[in-house]
Image 1 (cartoon, rainbow, N blue to C red):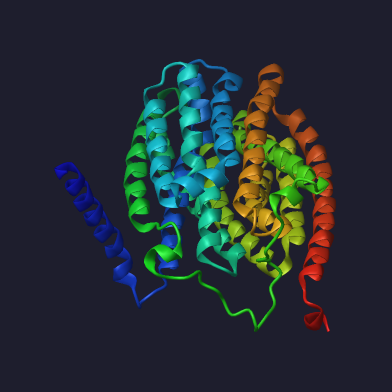
Image 2: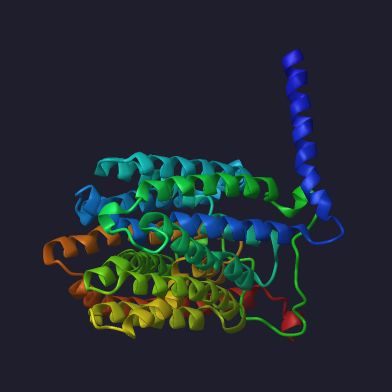
Length: 456
């Protein structure tokens, strides 16, 4: 009986603590914006330090531990497979656990991952670390942010999503500066053989612990938890292209051919874009570009990525998903094409890559939740978003080791980059045709649901 009373007292204390932070903002600011701020910080640090830095470590670790790149980068495959599995079941998991609890567990896995990385000596230890990283990122980045925005806001979701996920660019800028300084010294004086990569991982563990605590304290599952309703925006002034519509039941969705076609395109987008992103920096080093010059390009790339993700969200709200997707797709094959042509004497091409890759990468982050909402609506939103994120990450899991097999056998990435440009162009065309078909179905669906007196 005493144990039960003590447990009830603890729950009462926790409720008071949970209610204290929202009460500080009551009547001053809509608490959803505080949640958005927490999500921004979370994405900035999780993707900035957990994902954007991976190419910094690849060349250093493989040379110091004498591991082939194709073997080492299988840890990325484990990461993406773990993320894909959890994303596939995201809809069911978020309903059972709740957003906040999933975020807390996610940070626990991130801390475990980078702790293991810092002590690893052989390839299979990095593989386990990759799986832990995948679980952590699955519950602290795109999928959880998409769910939070859908719960807290009714309009302008593309812009809000773009702003939050743009934090990856800022995080990449900060992490590029900090991690490079830790690995190679304040003035970049250390060689790859001398780089302090273990220290880089351990500093990141501390960052994850601090940010995880802040995010857990600030995030709430839904507006109703703090006595609020989802926030809407005045749509009377100007009609927007981004949609917030009821949508189909999953039993209807699974009978639509473009549901599977878009899924296949998502898989290939993950394949191409992560293969590009993970190998671009090692490729620049391989062709003989100066290390400090490459570091400068990547720091600017991170800032442009921040702007690109915001613009992708704004473009969705203003221009619609098809135009936004087309612009990002064109940017992706220009970025990969610049890598294929790059040489030791290249001055402009690294910047071409830095700029256009920034506008390509929103395809696998900002646009996935928005595509799920635009094509299929709110009814099955979390489920479809989880499926498409899962397929994108599976593509990443397959693409990274395959492209590194090309490197191990040919000593260069150039030939596979050329193949990727052609394949990515075809993939973009198929994606546009599938979205066009989905638009026609949506309009017909909404027409049937509109009462006749409203049509008149």
